[in-house]
Length: 321
Image 1 (cartoon, rainbow, N blue to C red):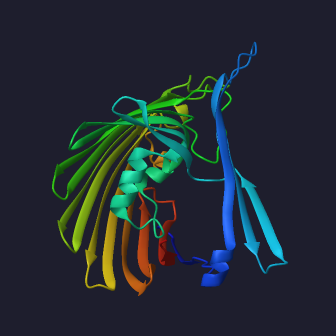
Image 2 (cartoon, helix red, strand yellow):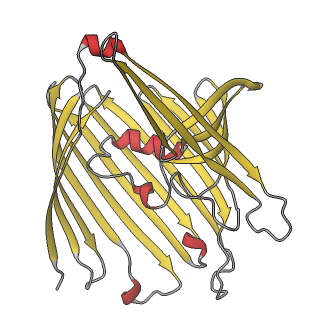
């Protein structure tokens, strides 16, 4: 018999407000830098890597004519830090640095409730990565992208093998209100010391679409397939996700989502079953001034009888700025 667990999770965004006079007295400055490293040392395995960008952010504040303060923060734990160049390559826009991953960004925007639940791809791909990409408008309704990145996701160093991820994709405005995106990426997986995976190529195919049915109703769906997960042979995952948002009035909206995850592994017995379904349903209330709060019910049901199903009540407050 399956066990049940109930959790209450709350998250509140901290907001710091400054008076008009204080805001005028403060100034922000900084520096961001990153690089591509090509190591030619004999015997080294990690020959290439996009290094994580470092950001120095300084805040100066004049308390009075005689008193001032300065704070400098240095970190490489930033989600985005990139430069966009529109004339480096003819007809292309190039991004260099830590940047959003295209498929993830599209799907997350269609879903729209990351504060409640991340998109399906979150378990396989990071929101951003270090690398270089190019976007080309091949038609007024079609934009194509190509990219080369570390493949580890932001916040993670390049692996010792130094394998990079290559990706191609496209975003299509099918008709007014209907947009679709497709992406494929791949990288050679890590070699296992016990020779169990032999560096199986890790591939991802993602197809998603979002449709604005009417002013107050939007729906979306996506199909994701990942092969060679963690570089293991016969270790593939497919996931379907469908969601919708309905605005009841200017203050209240309802949302829902359904996920289905299926695994195809070398071990097909019931003990290794990792399949699950996820159901999310909630309501969001606007508090005004770009602040909103949401309450949602989430139920994750595992096929494996011994796994604990997860039932949660999620409460979130977010501030958009």
